[in-house]
Image (cartoon, rainbow, N blue to C red; front, side, top):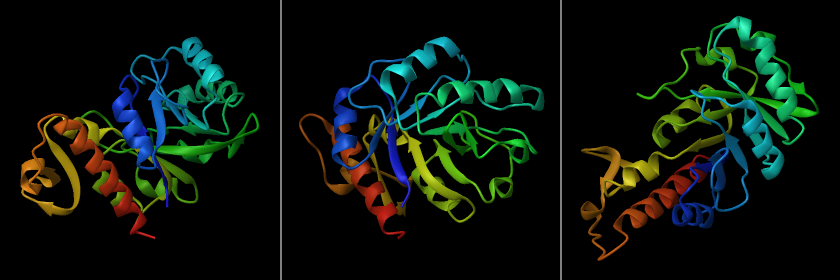
Length: 220
């Protein structure tokens, strides 16, 4: 079963709920965190190398992403980021975003294992690299819906996944269910007969964490 990661800093109750459900904790660094950071990511649109590396040095996560590999003349820069990040982590995540990038990547760098990160396509972004180019590599799934992530295990050697869609949906009173309904896999609490006087959003998130974890375990 892949490692499941709740990736969102700045919210203590959600972090504690996810960790209690068996998730690892991830955060986009640097930011306020509420627990040991197992997975580190950064703002890929506004990368800041020195701040990010300083945060990795402080938190020493198991795994961390580096600068997105968006075009061929960026390779040396990305590997430089990876070599520096490898001082602080066990696994460096490289995110190839153009076809042909994977063939030129090392399996290890600076003493750390290299994992490929596949950015699951959503309205916020994603990769256009075909899944078969990731063949033979351990892959981390960045974002996307739980259902889409599970489908990708048919095509990729998925070792870990992260996301915060369950948190986003919880603010609408929705939780994830393995059973598909009118809103896809996201159901309203009232459909399940749940209406708490307070903390409805947190309860929706708790249910999502539980159901997603059970769905992944059922795939064994």
